[in-house]
Length: 172
Image (cartoon, rainbow, N blue to C red; front, side, top):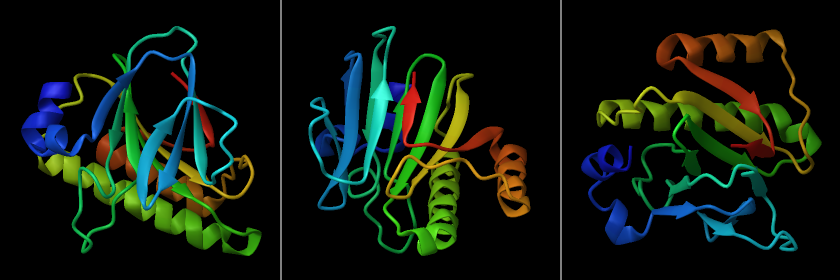
């Protein structure tokens, strides 16, 4: 997996976009538009995404926006996480209640274009389960499965065989 990413995105190592963690828990926050890992859960920056790694397996963290992909002409998600079994693309959005649908639409679009970019660059996922995760809202979101979101889930499944989820944390 790592070699496939480095071949597709040669500046990945130079820019420090890829790191590996074995911590049982860590958080991802956004600093100046770039996703970074913090191990201390007392950080209050928002938005944040919590990762639980109860098995303490090695997890790859890949900063995408403002690190792996810089082109402002294209939308891209914030980061990706992966282990031997799963590859997860994540987009974080802080939004007020009335902005929820707009934020979800934007997050979905960013996830879609990022997965398209990885596929176009021939990144091989090595049989890993693909997940597109939207972290939208000020509190831990409750997944909503409206007709519109069901349509999006079906579209992303048909195009990439990826699950679409709404979550502010993940167990890997």
